[in-house]
Image 1 (tube, rainbow, N blue to C red):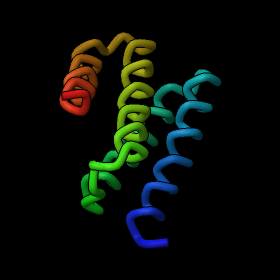
Image 2 (image 1 turned 180 degrees about the horizontal axis):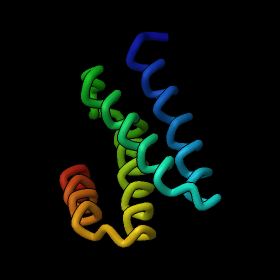
Image 3 (image 1 turned 60 degrees about the vertical axis):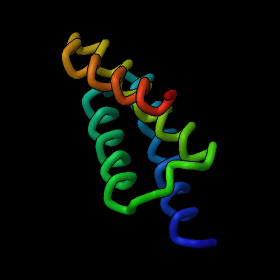
Length: 89
């Protein structure tokens, strides 16, 4: 397993935990964890060409969007939507 696969595995686990936190009403912690996952994406230069990586990135943005909706921070929620649109293009 190469370094990119290991990073993607860690990010996938982070996504699962963030989703759990969001569903158990620990919204701010879920958002914080998603931000940490995005930092891993950016810092480790993960190739965003594979479907697994793209779907994981989408999942992180969706969790963040749902979290920001729950705390009524629509300005940052709009930024999450922009990230999602860029991925879908």
